[in-house]
View: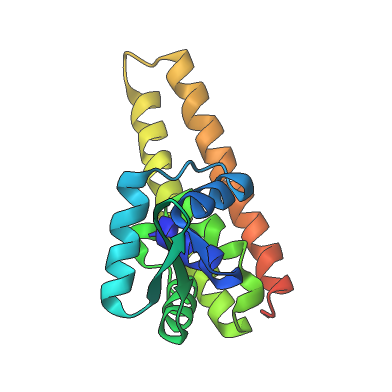
Length: 173
């Protein structure tokens, strides 16, 4: 879903053709958009009325298709940004994509995204703590596995602390 957000957000800035859209996404993210992802998404958005495709004639070459975001597409983008479903909240790219576009959201929408991510992290911590406890009780306790678990727990706890800071900055209490 974050790929859809990337596509729509880049179309919001100006109408572009597919190759240019791929180039813009690659220039602003660590994600390499490929044709098998891009064009089916554009067709889906076009079918939904979120994107308009226009054929631009070129001298001596086939027409180039240029895509631009409709008002419906802008609303769809906003709705995607404001919603971080539980099944996606644990996916770092999903969260960070939305976080990077918090300027487009109202404080209450920001708080909802942050709360969803926080719930996913709390569940991850609980799971990791369970793994850690079982590993400590195991006769086959592995040093390197314990290091991995400890690092993952530390990362999740640091991110939860960061979420508290973000919540205050996003208009939270």
